[in-house]
Length: 286
Image 1 (tube, rainbow, N blue to C red):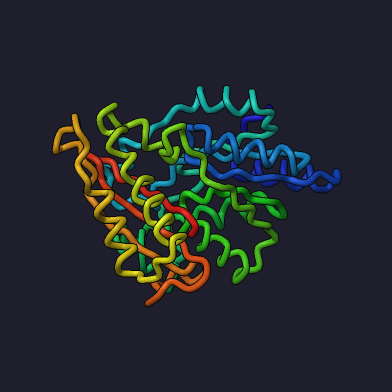
Image 2 (cartoon, rainbow, N blue to C red; image 1 turned 90 degrees about the horizontal axis):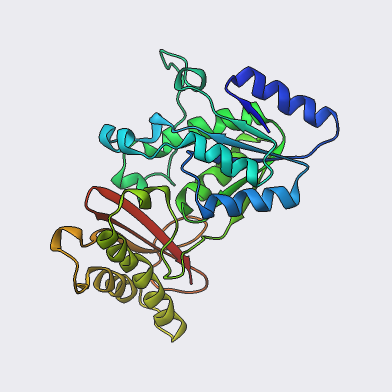
């Protein structure tokens, strides 16, 4: 397995592999690899000749410097995971390599970024698409694997590829959950055992709302109210400070991310909440 820190070297390596007739699977990550990342890598390994994993904690997508500082970093463990899964190339650049200073160019997103995470985290998706666009330029023609847990990110990156004509095929990968239903996230590493129990309220609220829709409920307001009530329900043995504090619970169209007046056809249910100083998101299709 090759570890590369230079952007130019990574670009050259990808170009060389393609000239040899190899297909490339790119898995962009911010490290702290968990089973969700493993699923992305395994699928890329099945579908592509070469798997390249990027590990870079992108400062442009953090609106809170404390959140950036506390984001888990475990490069040596990540390299071991990547090696075990048969990754061919790990691109782990320094911040100055990805974002030379001063930063004079920055992408922006209209429409899709103004709701959900975008309304709670101003500038977040501008930072996301800026770094993802740079990764796509460096990797060149490839398949890129993104988890559905960050559903809005997936929708925005997919639209960016279409609109900007990147030679990249986006491959969505379903959410990986633990045995209790909690969506896996690098941020879970920052939660105490009590907070992890509280975090189960996110998936519980989504599953309850999905079941209500399956039983015939079509009223968007009622489904959102149900999610909020389930997420806010007290759990025995968890301190008040460790309970989930709702940010949003919404029903949206999976393509436009707009909220329908009434549920007709497929929708996406999304929730976000804070537990202590950690912000979590989750979603399901319904």
